[in-house]
Length: 179
Image (cartoon, rainbow, N blue to C red; front, side, top):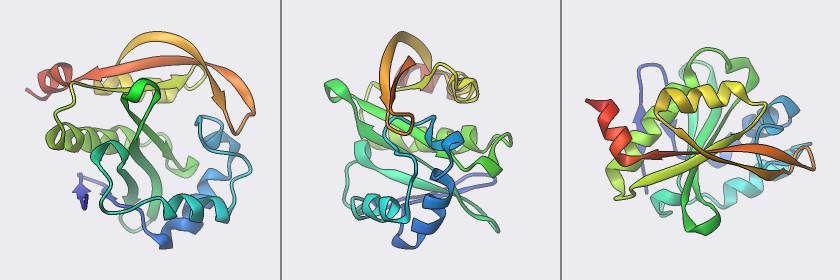
């Protein structure tokens, strides 16, 4: 599914082969990859290239990913979807450390969620954070996600089971905040 999303300060677009070096650079930082369940550390250029080979224009919304680009500065991170346990769609995201603390992730995730709820009939989207990732939890709270439980999830970068806060955002809550 081809899509480019523009926000006030960002461009969200489908990943391209030329993004590999920046993706590898930012994800080869444990401060970033250690907050993600499915990303190894160290993270190599080959890892980025392998992931990019899985990205196609014809993927359904539940498997679509967007790079987050800051005009004049280039790729800063990514936001996207995958099918989680139980077949439920999950949104995940990351931002390179130099871009933290500027509100970019809230802005990017808001645009990605607007797109997702516009192109699907999904009644909810799941997400979550490792307990120590308060910044990401705050992003989710700003977007209207609510805690639905606690679990343990394997973090590939840390090679450990980590306590996880499970969250969801319903279509009803999303539409309610847009008014």
